[in-house]
Length: 412
Image (cartoon, rainbow, N blue to C red; front, top):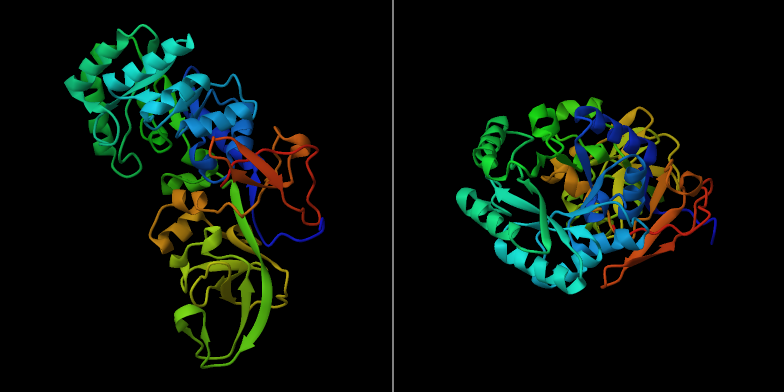
């Protein structure tokens, strides 16, 4: 079983991750702290391995969505790095936030009271960040109401409001709206002038340097997904997604392909079946529209993407054989498929392409300084309801280096 080839896998490039971290660092003042956003399984790249690499590379804070992700990081040995919870906590989650030494983002006095009660019960003080709504309409209160709630929260004995923040709704596409949100925040800034401040996400870093305040929250750019097109030349994609040819067939004109017979062969073609489908996260919306890379050539999908298999046209690809490596996302030869290309076809965004790569797709970590021998072992995992995850190794394909110890990774 050890030499069994992988059918469908994602390769995570540590050198690209470190490069992107360096690019981000070059955009922010030396005194500004970097919140490396690793929520949603590090955008599908693997929560624990990516978080370790980013911390080793100098990230100051890790940003996660919820307390389960915070607990996973603490269980993996990231015991001293601050963790910021970017989503609102449920009432019953504040004790776990205290236990994980995580910083909740709160917006109201009621949340602050619950956090205070949990902190007092544990005998600890809690650190929180307070969000003000300036136009996102998701978390936070507006203007005077937000300031009133903040002042009440500041009087609680076991809660320290370390920072105030807001979130820009359109930083990647609307600089005027972004500036209007900034102006709204600055209107109320005198009421919390002594507090640390953060507003900037990946796109905002390339708008105005003034947006890089006490902290910046960066996710997308770290993974090499450009928030704006011109950044493609500065950033390097971290994830490549690959599969294999499982079957080759010659079909004559008049035959149809896949469910619904949505593709009719007008002439004879050589078709390859691939070991990937929407059960792995390869969207059904890519049916008959997207391309893959086979032996350095772009090959079109024929028919509908099914749960476990996809068919492509390899008529013009000389030498294609069963077992060939096929690139769904990434580079092969002088061709490359970016997440933005698949997103455009599927009518979505690059975030969703990488975060959708499924749990049965093992991640292979290459050139990770924080892993034994730089990584190289395929990693899969299963989820426990408590929030802690336990990994299970998949067999390595020939040429991949086995890590000297088990690598913990959350579900993708």
